[in-house]
Amino acid sequence: MTSPLNLRVAIVGAGPAGIYAGNLLANAVAERSGRVEIDLFESLPAPYGLIRYGVAPDHPRIKGIVNSLHDMLDAQPEGADRRTIRFIGNVEVGKDLALDELRERYEAVILATGAIRDAALDVRGVDLPGSHGAADFVAWFDGHPDVARTWRLEATSVAVIGNGNVALDVARMLAKHAEDLRTTEVPDNVLAGLEASAVTDVHVFGRRGPADIKFTPIELRELGEVRDVDIVLHDEDFDGVDPASASTNQLKVMLRILSGWRERPVGEASRRLHLHFWHAPVEILGDGRVEGIRFERTRAGEDGTLERTGDHRDYDVQAVYRAVGYYGTRVAGAPFDEGRGVVPNEAGRVDGEPGLYATGWIKRGPVGLIGHTKSDALETVTNLVADAEAGLLSSIRPAADILDLLDERGTEYTTWDGWLALDAHERQLGETHQHTRERVKVVPREEQVALSRDEALAR
Image 1 (cartoon, rainbow, N blue to C red):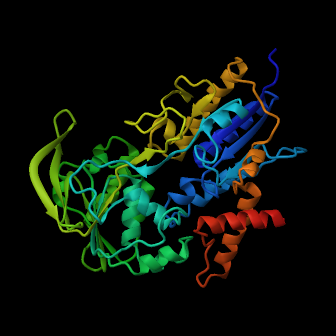
Image 2: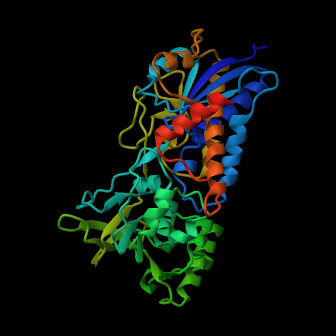
């Protein structure tokens, strides 16, 4: 009979991937009558990663996910002097702490840093002023503390490149009237920026056809519910498209939604959202800043691959938003595949690094939804536990708490109690706001840290 596991594990990244991994690990060890202490490190003062800073504020269903993640972090075993998962925010591994310092203090380290940078788009003119990465725009409208507080929305016509949910979020936020966001948790500085927007036309471009869209039905359906916005589709993009022959039920639903929109009258609304398919970007045009964008029409070849047709189309736009995917967030000291933007691994075990693991987008690339993140974490945790039971993990364990080291360095880390204080403060701001909201986000990092540390200490 093997002895119960007794582990100390560090997880780098407090988004869904990291929180799911911590919860699954805690449960797996408890099932084996063992004990585990998990420290969850986050570079931002608050938890939840892209759920807090990567999802549009008009998605109320995200609340359910946040509540679930909250319960995982808030759980404390009866009679224990600390939670199984301890949140340590405002600490960047690779800067405030070296990865090697974690590996010296924990039997295992799981990297769950996700992907917050935009993937590259290799076309001429991509660096012109007015050409933006979608991740930057999303971070702005979600009140990320490390981006500029202002965003110039002076363009009347904009292009959004991409056919996934991020492209839809960007397009919807650009087309939506600011007054319809006043009851959400959108920060005040963002609301002011959107109220000053000059946008009248938003064009969304995908390289493939309607039968290859990467949206989800709920995201697509939400687009058609935006007030005072006409959706414009083009008949030439739908040649041969038959919802009845869709490869999945999900796609069948989305093609029916698009078919319904084609029947709608256009011309009544003050803003328009144009959906274009079979468009591959060639060049962003402009002399000193974005003045237009050029595409080449595409089509599906006999073998299903994408073919270029030689038919070029130019569109007059004054801004371009690139929603072509994300790129992994590297951790200094960890292996990294520059081409794929991931930590090289086999089923979560980082190549050539015993005791080092990966989960989430930094493990498999920026694809999949929340459900994939949970199953992905399960694979990584299962292999970590198997390695622990096989005696493959280091048992080096200094007596000093990692918080002592952070205190020595003067690092202003935040804690779970600090997050509860910040969360309560934001909710109170929402209750007293002239437009009642669930919360009003505190944006500046220093203010988040001060509220978290000061109010937590006062408890």
